[in-house]
Image 1 (cartoon, one colour):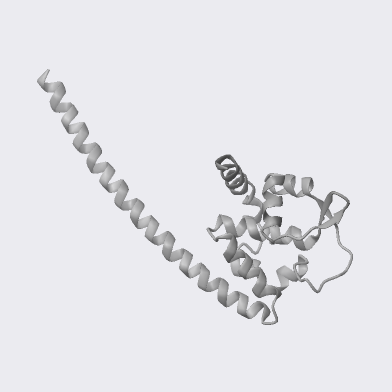
Image 2 (cartoon, rainbow, N blue to C red):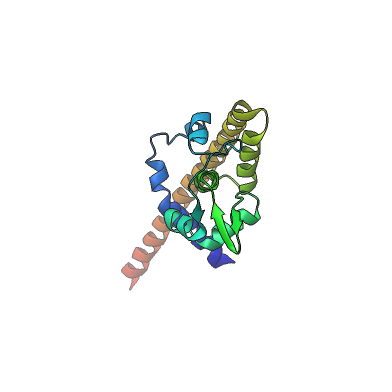
Length: 175
């Protein structure tokens, strides 16, 4: 299980630079109605679209097929079936992109699912954006607290290091 966790996170973080380079890298812009519709996240969009195999998605996003199957088992992706083969729509492709971005930003899969459900609901984008902004604010508060905790830990480690070096010098001078 630990190998799976490390593999997903390492690969996701390495691959997501291409999403960062997207001209709409701000989370609210990426979740905007025009971005989602143009990337076929809209469940009402039934026009013919490119289909992706699990291997193509894994290669494009530099994640394992196991990770994609996990997101499917969590109900975040819904591929078509052609016998034993999974065929992912443009909607699944966009959802995977958003899942990976959300994870990189520290959102739990349940929070990402809530965002998708809000988008799919009748309230649509307005409720989704309010929800996302609330989640972003909460995440920023957590990160700020973690940053303060890290700063405090670094300060304490520096003091401890100084004490150890001082004691080491004393010991050397005594010998």
